[in-house]
Length: 471
Image (cartoon, rainbow, N blue to C red; front, side, top):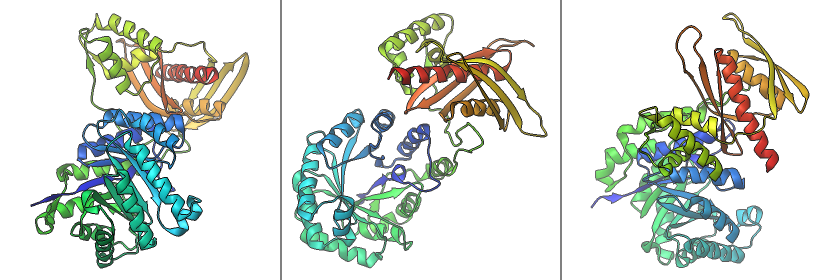
């Protein structure tokens, strides 16, 4: 009988010097992994309460098939905060991660072994009160005292964990050493046969993939791999091995190998592309998700759900204003698409008094040199000036505004379209900025597309400034 092996993707948990993702990319990558067919998608824990909770909620609402797993801290407060963000997921999982090696227990967690055991049990019990899918991750398991490791795993299972994962954090084990390590777990851990045993390996010796495959023969049923492997088990390699040698090892996984290359390349592109310091644009932003098509027959609930799908978090008042604007436009049009819905939100939601007012701008553009922008804004009667070079007139204009502000807001989307025809056609621009994880959109119209872009940016900026002042 063929054993089904879960692949738990840990791409989102990885960090590195050149590994930087925008908020939008942190939503897009889990959606791609869901399409790829991984069993579990692991997310980063909550560090910044507002931003990270919004990120987890956004992923939870878009992932349809995979389990979404988020680590909790060893406190009841952390469990509550994480569950509140994750609870809307179709398949939520809470992870209790704790080191079981003496060195890490004392220096990373400031706990003695007995206190660590108590903290593990209490955290798992708190998680089990929220969901039935709870995982215990024994960090640095291969360097721990075996007797304590057995106690920790047994305690986690007794407390209610349905999956227990052991980690080779140093990647120092060879496949035969991993075999012996796992056999010892089965001999000494009470109840291990009643839960799913997972494995996580570092790839220091380039043996992580081999250890993972060897571990299947010793009871491992969940493997932590990465579509973008930074010193981890490679999702691509493991899936290919199952596809080619699954019959001989009696195991298979649900990853769709036909779509593997395309999706892995897309994820790698986002992970490897960082924002240029000389541009306000965030590179690597994935394309918009599935196209939205609404009509006059759609209800207010359906429209606001579509708005939420675009990434907006509107108040009840703003939602009502968007609905009224939608009805007026839907009465004249057969279909309202996602881009048009963006425009409606930018025009109707959160209309605020302007903090920044555009006074003048001057753009110099040439095919032989960089564009230059000179911007003059007014704030509370004070004139603010900024000058910047860019790869194009819009690039330079946005960068000049950033120079005035002294900060960078993530540019989530930038849309341009014509709204009238002819030589004097009006151009419409929608700019979507993120601040604190929340999405703000601004709209601008002009016969000058650069002018409409600047208007849209300042319109979104004023919404951010107003809400930050109110908060």
